[in-house]
Amino acid sequence: MSAQDTTYRSVIIPAARLMGFFADCVTQITLREDQDGSLLAAYENAQFKKSVHIGDYIEFQARVVSRGTRSRRMGVVALRHIRAPGPGESDKPPGTICAPPEIVAEAIIVVVVRKKEDIAVA
Image (cartoon, rainbow, N blue to C red; front, side):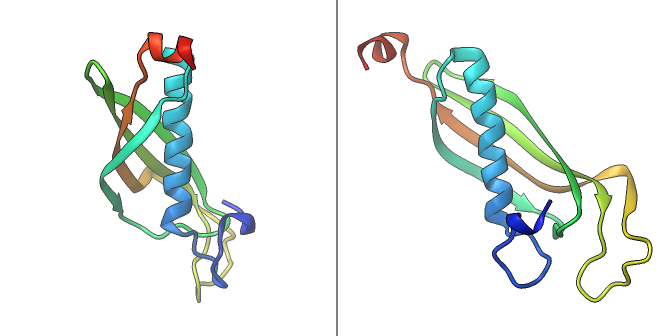
């Protein structure tokens, strides 16, 4: 994560930024499956388990959890592979490898999938 990812004066990344990355992951899945970005309908049970700091190396993963005729539920997770020092911590070492990676946030996202005939008309 970089300084551009925060709006705070500290080194903490806002949870809203992580949710934006979650939405990007879901968009990629819907583009691959439907050639359409679909519409984000809801976040279910978003959990932010650990603070994320400038300098952290975060991996985002997403998978389809369930499919309906007009909607999909997708599980998304943010994994920290390298932890940068937080506020008030020494910058020696500049980063710590997380083995295994730490879950810093996770959620279920519901998207509405447009019907093929709706896309053709649009």
